[in-house]
Length: 251
Ligand code: NI
Image (cartoon, rainbow, N blue to C red):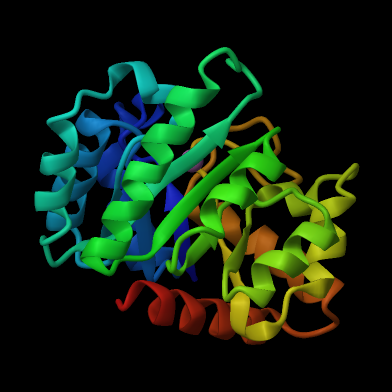
């Protein structure tokens, strides 16, 4: 299994981070993890984790909720991190109007700057979108970039627009939730060559462990659910999601 989106820099892992990661790679069948940066500090931490473990990779960038923490010079630092061999993407970047929506223009401007950097540095992007799908689509479709919408919960119509433009779609544990509707519909719709899986650990833990701290071992339940929805085997979903992650992130 390859977990294309996790946050092992989170405080939730402070007590057992190294032991946990070691176990995931050696005993739990996890073949790769991309740790996503949200600001400068977590981007630097992601790179440090990637240097410590063969199977760990980093995405670096500013999450839309971190727009206030962003300073102009930070973009140069992000750019320099992108030349590191274990830094495979810019992320997570995007828009989020769920908690704070009075800073839309700052969010959009930061998003565009990071998409421009992705074009310049020829790197894929990891997109975070919440309650802003129209604005998000309008912006990403302006750029000739490849990437993935992480924890995608949009409609099938939105999925179609993204897939037509070469984007990948990633499913976390939410696809296993009893009330999941869009994720299940999309899990059936996304073609084999564009589907990815993730945990978003420590969040979004799959059923029957919903609410507990997430880690990449729980992705097994997400893969099992995807196999059930798509009427195929766990092994097949595991193989194609690994192949897709390797292709998109060149790992
Ligand atoms: Ni995330």
